Image (cartoon, rainbow, N blue to C red; front, side, top):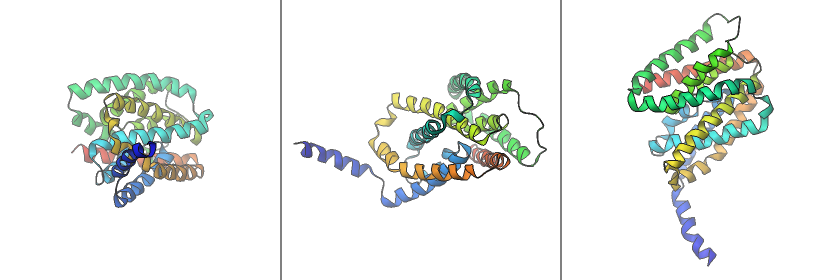
Length: 260
């Protein structure tokens, strides 16, 4: 009786799986995306979305990546929780919550394309200055946690991508690479959990095909995170900050193209 009942469920799961060609394409994109995530702590949506769009409905990409990002960030935090900077988290998280609420309101009342374009130019300018400009002699004041946290939360709510804002702040505040990486992962885990919760209540995760696809791509996420972590362990602070700024610049260019 049990085996008879399980056959329709098994057939449903098999039908929901992507084709081998689609799975290989998505897996390759996610390995690259999570290598970058493992190094910089953000960037999966910007890197993987254009490729994933060839293999799955666009509306499913952000919810699926929210699940995978939460799993990746949580894994980082659980393994290295002591490395996170608690003081920075206490300053940033309330600002992120406030910014997320503001972003939801702005999304309903303003033209997001205008804000997206302005943010993209700011990100590109900051990244270029950080890569080729003079080295700062002092750290950012902790008071900057409020605007950076609020801005990251706001654009995370509006566009599903605010991690680079947190990275700009943390690389200007923290000295240890591991502290930057784990603190960033904690912030991403918090923001993706909030986003996934909204998707859950909205009924988005009732889509069996998307959940099965996400589960089938977990090995690609793990492989990318493993590679990214081992690359990070070999980097000095200067090399790590440069890598993050290159990803930030790529994110800004991607946002500029998206806002056209």
